[in-house]
Length: 362
Image (cartoon, rainbow, N blue to C red; front, side):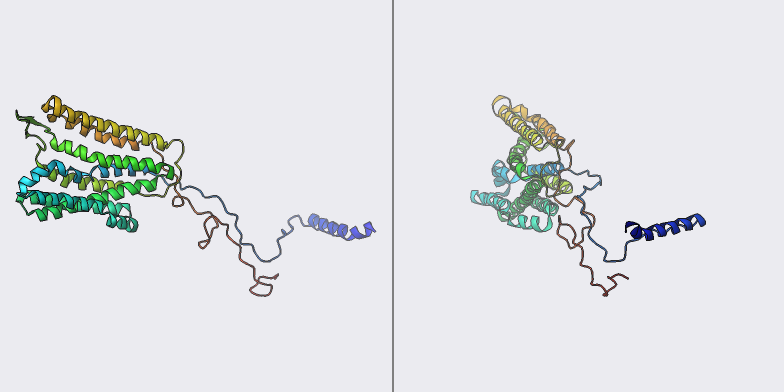
């Protein structure tokens, strides 16, 4: 029975063998799968990081935001220039207080900066702050130089304060978005520290006598600012918008997850920035104490160490790696259709029934 069952198979093999020996050039056609519905299912592959070179890191945005914070606090120096503004404008005490309150209102009403940040982004918010501060300080300089009414000076100081609010909002929240949740508390503390330090640093620059000389009464003659309020406001009208524009060019926001790895070391870098700020504060406090207690001639050179220490903040950007982003920097998996939900494999379409659309066996 077995021999009878296998006889046709042996006969077929013998005939094919004979044909191959008789025609050496003849080759058997490769067997193909019978036609049928083709499966469209593609195995999902893991997302691959983009290989494009990245020159930007979140530390660049953080340092840019800290410099913007440093320029957002001139409104707090109003107490140091209060009496000079009163004399230049010939205003009453109530009118001068109105000017100071107008600046505070412009700074702390941050509803508009928040809306601009959510709708247009951090860079537009920073540029808007630079434009408003430039307009406000220029108008304030003209008001002090020309003796405008106190109401006009209040409007100018309010514009300057509003621009500082834009700089503050962009510098703070752009850096917060670039860091993971476990690091945002330290980032917020560092930014707030720089914002509070700005008034101390700027008032030291105002009260200094860089390049001048001190008379017997302690007044400064000559120098870069020489205690002149108009020169101080003119400096703000140039320096603050310039730093705002540069900070906007360096600002970039990416929603980030955990750090980029052991080489990023966010806690170590943030601790180094905090230590740097403590050194800056101690230096300013020590120099102010020496001016008031020991020797007033310290004013002639006290600003040089401060100006030399500020650029050292740029060292925080050296050697940093890009942080891991959530989605924007990852390539879409191969085979994933445009309408699929991210992270789910593509679903194969149902084949048409036999006899409709050529889906059956031809």
